Amino acid sequence: MPELPEVETVTRRIEKLILGKKIEASEIYWKRTIGGISEKRFDKLVNGNKIEKVWRRAKYIFIQLSSGASLVVHLRMSGDLLVKRVSTPIEKHLRVRLILSGGKDLRFIDTRKFGRFVHHQHESEVLNRLGPEPIDSDFDIESFYQKLKKSRRMIKPMLLDQSVLAGLGNIYVIETLWKAKVHPLLPANKLTRKQAELIILSAANVLKKAIAARGTDLGDGVWKTGAFIPKVYGRSGEPCIRCGSKIVKIKVAQRGTDYCSVCQQL
DNA sequence: CCATATGTTACTCG
DNA sequence: ACGAGTAACATATG
Image (cartoon, rainbow, N blue to C red; front, side):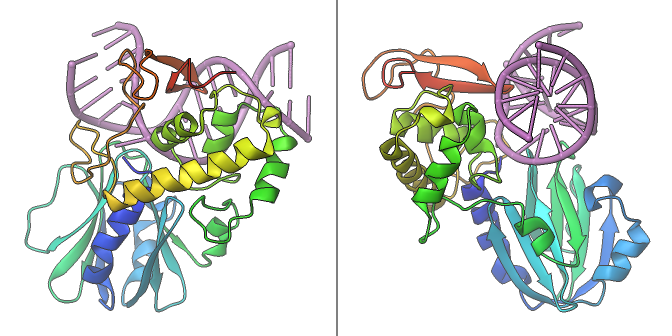
C-alpha cells in the first residue's frame, strides 16, 4: 500500500499519538521484522526510551528515541502502523508492538511480512542511500537531468530507483509518466531537459494531490482511508481520459505498467 | 493450479 | 561496469 503519500499519511496519523510517550515494553511476533537482532537485544535498545520525534523521508518513517537512536520503519507492500489501547485484542497480522506510557501501544501490522521495523543507531545509514524527493522545494533539476543523461536504463525502473528519485512507487510512477507523456520504456538518456523537468513537475503534482487525498484507495481492503483516484494505474482496457484511446498494460521490470500508447510515444 | 498485488535486494547472464 | 531478467521474501485474492 505505501508509497510516499501513504507513508506520509501514516506518519501524520501516529505522530501526535505517540510523541513524548515512553516505551515501556516491546513484543515481537515475527522476528525478521526487526532486522536480524534478538528480541532481547531489541527490547534493551528501545525500552525506557522517550519518543522525541516522528518524521517521514521517502517511504521511511523515523521514530527518534531519547537515546539518540531511531526506529526506522518501512511498510513495504502491506505494512501499517496503528495506535490502540493496550487492552484492544491483537490483530492476526501483528508483527511488532510497543507498549507506551498512558495505556496505549504502537502496532506494526504487516500481512506479507516484507515490512521492517528496525533499530538504527544512526539515521544516516538509511538516509544516505536516498535520492531527492520530487516535492523537495530545493529540488535540483539540473543534476537530475545529468543523471538521466548518463544512463541507458528505461525511464520507469529509473524513477522507481530510490537512490535516483525517492518516494515514487509503481502507482505514482505510472501516473507521473502518463501526465508527462513519456513512454515507460524510453531510455533515460533519450529524454530532453524539458521532459526531465516535466517528469519532476508531474511527480510533484501527483504526490501532492495524493497526500492531500491521504493516499490511494486500492479497493482491495488494505488501504481504505485514501481518496486519490489514479488516472491510468489499473485502468488497462479503459479509455485514456485525455485522448480516448485504450490504456494498455505491459510488464516492465516485473511490474504491471499501464500507459496510453497514443499519449506516451517512444 | 495460475496470476496478480502499493517494495526492495541479490543474483545471473550477456 | 552496466543493465535486463529472474528469483526471493510471504500472504491473500480472484
